Amino acid sequence: MPSEELIAQIESKIDLAVLVSKYLPLQESRRALKGSCPFHEDSGLSLMVLPDKNAFKCFGCGKEGGPIAFLSMIENKTYQETVATLSTYLGLAERQSA
Image (cartoon, rainbow, N blue to C red; front, top):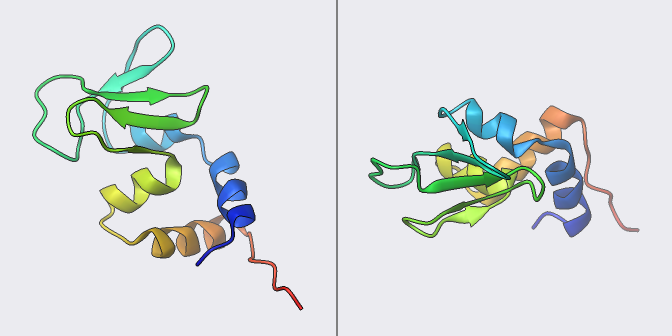
């Protein structure tokens, strides 16, 4: 299981709005970005990306989370696989305790 420290480092380095916009178009709203949720049939704009919190929430299916959760769901990978991929991509390593 990845450490909380590694997860926090990854989540702080990945801009969720940029990540989500690579998979679907987003429309600007007041303090959020809106899009059609890729996790269920969605003809509206039920997915909200909150840049100030680096989080997303779908008001249609209830899925929510940060960059790691979004990427693991959209790529159909486990949370641990996604953490490993992102930590390698970002050049982060899990600290080993002695």
